[in-house]
Image 1: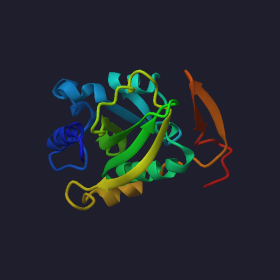
Image 2: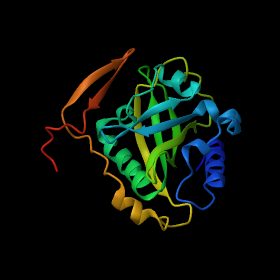
Image 3: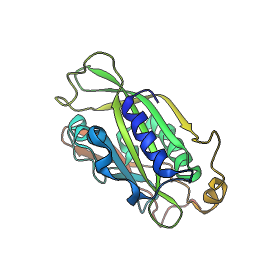
Image 4: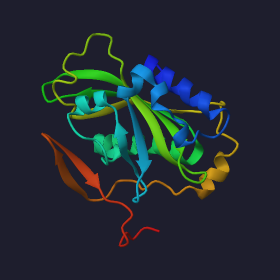
Amino acid sequence: MKHATSQFLFGYWNEIRDGRLAPKRFEIEPGRMGSVLPDTFVLERTEHNTFAFRLAGTRIGERFKAELRHVGFHEIWTEDDRLKVEVVLEDISARGGVGRLECTVGDDHGNSASVEYLLLPLIHTRNSIDRMVGAMSILSDSEVTWLGNTPITTQQVVAHEVIWPEGRPHELAERLKQDQPTLVPHIRTARIVRVDRRQFRVYEGGRKDDPRP
């Protein structure tokens, strides 16, 4: 983890986790996040077995110039990078890992910046990981004045990894993996959804007429 925001959020999450697979969702107290709260977000598992934004901090909304609530996390990535992102989400939700994504973001005017995403598992119901708390942090050394003025329209993954807090998957991970539904890969026909001046490909999942088992 490169950014201080990621390090702070991981430390807070790990403290609450206290050696367990993941903390409960209600154990996360926004008041303890202080100045990093505007850079944080919460994802929730949807009925289509994907993850979508449940909440997004004010600075994140300003960077995308859009309301991200209910937008699938996979939708903000290019088709080429979507599989990389979903592999990370799978390891988090099925094995209790901590996900880190480093990417380059850009706007329609040729501006760019380096960004770090951190994704941490949460348990909401039963013993399954169906929520994630995360942060979006700017890594660029120089001041990025365009962010917040023009919307992010592109994101490209530069590096991705899954971190194990104990150095290996938690002892409960194998049992969790057996009970956890596999994330639906988004490789089917998409529909185009436009948000402000941007457009996303949205891949429907979990349909009854899906021929796959």
